[in-house]
Amino acid sequence: MLTDRTRVRRHADRGSHDRATIHAILDEAYVCHVGFVAEGSPVVIPTAFVRVDDAIYLHGAVANHMLRSLAGGACCVTVTLLDALVLAKSAFHHSMNYRSVVVFGRGRVVDTHDQKRAVLDALVDRLAPQRSLHTRGPDDSELRATLVIEVPITEASAKIRSGPPVDSAEDLVLPHWSGLIPIVTSLGAPIPAP
Amino acid sequence: MLTDRTRVRRHADRGSHDRATIHAILDEAYVCHVGFVAEGSPVVIPTAFVRVDDAIYLHGAVANHMLRSLAGGACCVTVTLLDALVLAKSAFHHSMNYRSVVVFGRGRVVDTHDQKRAVLDALVDRLAPQRSLHTRGPDDSELRATLVIEVPITEASAKIRSGPPVDSAEDLVLPHWSGLIPIVTSLGAPIPAP
Image (cartoon, one colour):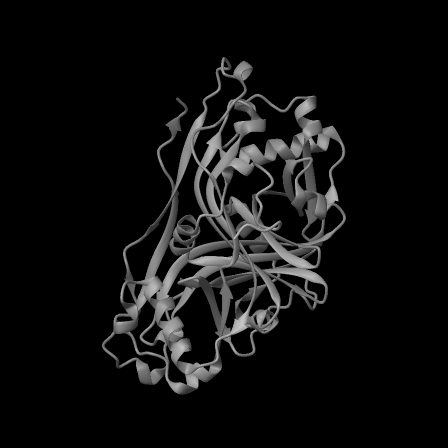
C-alpha cells in the first residue's frame, strides 16, 4: 500500500502502512471526510461510511453531487480520531495525539441490489450492534434511490501520534505545567423518539 | 457568503450561511480537514486550526507539503462535529446529527512575526484557556521554522442535522426501537508529563 503519495513525509516515524492498524482506525470512526475535485477546485464533505474487507463504502441519494463525482473519479477519504491535547512547556511543542488514515482511490458504483443491501446492513450495524436485524430493511424503491460507492483500500496510510509532550532539554526546567488532556468520545444514554 | 459552491443542495433546509452559526461550529472543533489538489488529485489532511475574526489559520513546518500547496492555492477547509446517532424504524432513515462547516478559499502566507505570534498564541489558547500566558512563547528561530497560512472565511456554509429520526408514517407502527444515541465528546483528567 506504500506509494509516493502515501509515504508519510512529515514525522515519518508516525506513519504506518500496516493493514490491521488502518482497519482498526477506520472501524472506530463514524464519519470520514471525502475529498474530490469539482470544476478544478478541491471539495471536502463529511459523510458516514463503513469498511467491509478491503474497501470503504459511502452512500447517499442517487442525485448526490459528491457521490456522482466519485463514480469513476479520483477521491481521497480521510478518517481522524482525536485522543488528547498535548500541552508542552514551550508553545512550539504543543500538539495533539491522534490516529488518522488517508486512502487514495477511485469510486466504483455498487450496482447489484444484493451487494447494496449488504453494504446498507453493514452501515446500520456500525451504528448499533445487529441493528440491521432490528429495523425494517430497504425495499426495492429505497435501494433504487440509494447510490452506493465502493473505494478500495489499496493505496492507504495511517499516521499516529501518541505519548507525552516532547520538550527540548533546555525547556524542561521551566515551571509551566505540561502533559496530556485526554479527549474522550463516548455514547450517551439513548433518547427514544417522541 | 452564498455562492453556487456554498449553496447546500442536499437537504437545503439543513443549510445556513449565518456568520455566528459558522463561527460557533468552527470554535468548538479542534481539528479541520483541509482539501487541496496535488498533481491533479484531491488530498485531504487533518490538522489543528484556529479561527480569529473572519479567517481560519493553519500552521506547520516550513517544509510542510500541504501548507506549501495552500500558499496561494485553492483549498477547502471542512469542520465536523458529531452530536448523535439517529436510529429510525427503517434502515433507510438512519442518520446522524451533526454540525459541519465547509469553507472554500485560497491560502495566504502570514509573513510578519507579529501576526504569526498572535496566531500561534491563539492556537495554544484554543487548547487550554490563556495557555499562551503559561508556556514559553515562540522565539525567532521557531517563528522562522513555522509556516502560518490564513484562509479567509468569505465563501462558507454550515450544515446541521438535529432532532429525532424522521420515519415514514407507515413505518411508525413497527415495533423497532427508534431514537437518538448521543455522541459525547469531553476532556478527561489531565495527565502530567513524566
